Image (cartoon, rainbow, N blue to C red; front, top):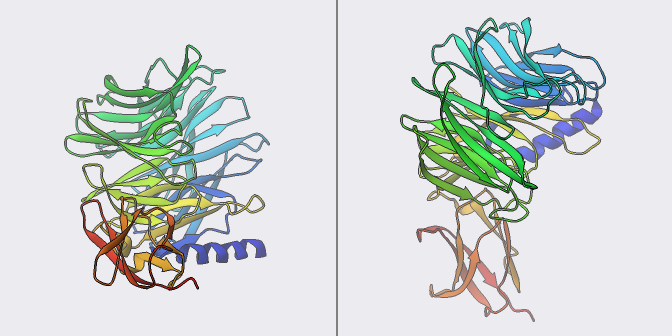
Length: 473
């Protein structure tokens, strides 16, 4: 317990040092090795968090209920299998009439059959029922949403439909609140894959996901968006295919368009990194635009989720701790949060007050357990490109002799050029683009007073900082 307490203190100091970006953050140290995957706001203003335990013993899923500030009220742990090789987790949650519906994946043993299962829990945390929806060689439930009729559930995931096969296909279904299928379907693509998200309009249901296949000894990867009617019949498919790993993880739907967030493999656009992209489609599957967002973070896992604000979509990176805002043209405009940490940030939602709520989990070293958390992002970090503060940029050392370091306090994805001006406001150096951390050689400057200007792509001065160049003698 002392080890867990020290971890809690470390994590608290680490995160709260990130430029006051959080209204609150809560760690659930009483549930070591709990991995949080999804969160929903409850009718009382609190939150319901779901996930599973990372353990060789497997078999456990969890539903955690909190108040509006993330304080734990109760937790329900469900056990499906007790075998050493069992693995089991809940990936998605939905709430209907104060009942919690949990969708997950359970594997009875490594290499054995998998199950898509649905759990119903009442408002006190008591399990009402636990049903197996599908039991095949490779199957799992990934996403669960409430249908527009308000009384049923739409599910998405993957299913091999053959007991011993691991070649799954994107799976989707409509289920009533008793756990009975209204309809059940697969996308019979010529490649195996999985659906990651599902959305509904009055006339259509949209799915997105990924797949891969071997073609003439060459591995191809696929991203897709699919439209089906309200009975589950396929209308159209939008498919991107190439030889680099990628997939569409999440969608936003407005009155006439689909915005799909994706990740791109390390062989495309920036060797060694995963990159992001966003695709805009109309409701007939026609591409309006497709933009690639290079990722400069050295951590290779950069998967996206999407939530919606009036100003534009918000991207969520899976493993770089970053939440970034874009306008409706797909251009980056603001950073909401950037921990700089490598950890799974699994879900971000908007609560009833239009605040961003995030959940995920940490593992600081191989010898310590996973720790899940819930956080609310402060409105003070919702800064637009033209609202950077002097404190966002730090110069060190100052005064300096030869080299000047420039640090960013917040994640800034837009290209910013750094110029040096003398005391008469004449430009004397162009230091190039600002990266995560920059070391600039200013040894050619004569001793004196100088000003650095940080200038955006549209030639707006975002910030100015003064420094002193001293003699090297």
